[in-house]
Image (cartoon, rainbow, N blue to C red; front, side, top):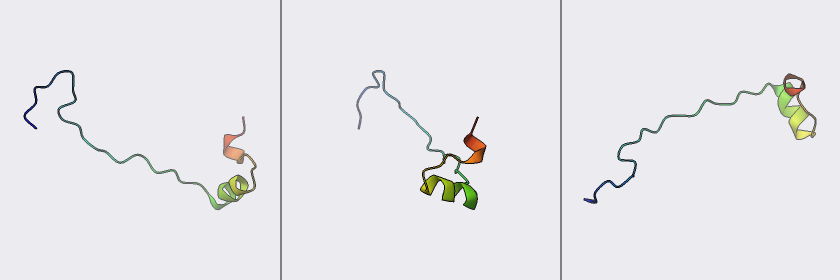
Length: 41
């Protein structure tokens, strides 16, 4: 490294993204191409 920081990110933390938790019913609906009830609006 050793390069001067010219508008660059010097330190960044990697954090886990929240996991998507679908019910079995929602998974089945998505596989069949339907919109799960929780997403209908």
